[in-house]
Image 1: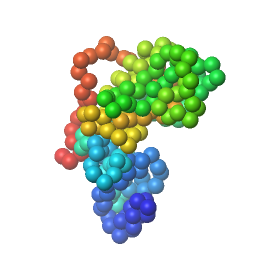
Image 2: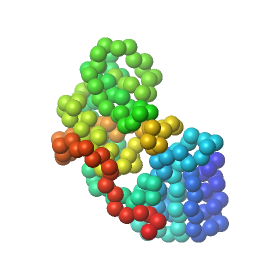
Image 3: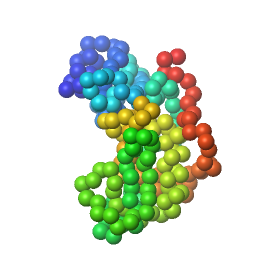
Image 4: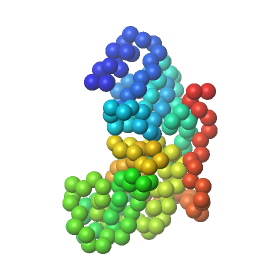
Length: 207
């Protein structure tokens, strides 16, 4: 329904700013007029848990849209942007070696890979997924996941419909994103762990 509303707005207005579900950015419609996309990483409304963002449309942008989180404009390079690919990872195999914790906990960021300890996991479980075929150590891939999250302010992760203790939405990683991260594990430079986990951003969309 919200896509129909955007369509009506764009038919009658040259400039549109619309608060829409955050899933808007992952679908193909109306991108030719999208000037900027601001992903809102906190709950905005009391009557819904649906994560949202603000889409800014112009008559003819003539460029790739500006991208940001909570009003902070972000810039990404080729090592930041996931794309559809395949790796040696196998999900839900009969003989797993590790498990993927695919969703953050309420207490904070918690997406990681750990050793499989023989526990029974349903194939329909979206939270914990058995895997095998790691091309690097689980520790290294966990460092890459965490560093990539810091570098991108979780822009490319799907927001889950409940918040962490700090007010940010819990995030979920897709199988495709983990395939991509596994494939770039040999290329990704991971610094030593730091006490400072604050994402680096440049300027604000509002400026």
